[in-house]
Amino acid sequence: MMPSPTDDLAVDARGLQKRFGGFSALNGLDLQIPRGAFYAYLGPNGAGKSTSIALLTGVYGPDAGSIRMLGVDAVARPMEVKRRVGVVPEELSLFERLTGRQYLTFCARMYGLDGDEAAARATELLELTELTYKAGALVAEYSKGMRRRLAIAAALIHAPELVLLDEPFEGIDVLAAGVIRELLRELSRRGVTLLLTTHVLEIAERLATHAGIIRGGRMLDQGPVGSLLSRYECPSLEAVFEKLISVPASRNARLSFYGEAPASVTPLRQETA
Image (cartoon, rainbow, N blue to C red; front, side, top):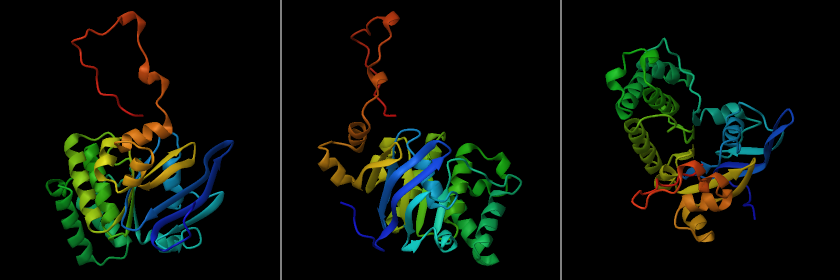
């Protein structure tokens, strides 16, 4: 049973539909995220996660359905929502001819912060994301992990109440991942609502208080992580994911021309999609 609309939800999206030509990316999606939750948004490739975020952030308009964010109708009053939300897209588009410090200061000024406040927040975020030593370098010189951290810093510069992160751990090294993980933990402790898409279920397991699992543009189930584990009698979020999505046939594939593995060989740990 769907909950009633309430301002206790940071995100309350109902019946979302989105088509691109003959392809239906979202098929009546319902997404509810309580304020202060760390929400892991999970699903296989092509499930509709990035499309959902594009609708929440106003990149696309829904073909049907409603979106309330932080108690505001996000379709009718998009600018009011944008002032209170931070976004880290999967595909980053940063101004490469600015330095890291200039880029953060620019983002702060775009949100209406004065010069002194913009500079102070840029300095603090550069320290928090461990980019101070690169503050004067052009963004063009940044590695992928540095760019990801800079994008997160830019998303936080205006102190948003809700932050949407689309695959922030994609393609970065373990050190950058550790910095991002600890930063997200700190935001969660401060009561910021977080929506995170990731294919790394171990990260979702460590961080999330709530989760939603999507497939084919529909929400299969969502709620507090503990409730999901209990409902499906599973020991982990990864196990819930596998039960709802179903394990692909290739998981048990065997190569006939290699024969059987020697008994002394320990199989690699199975990974989810």
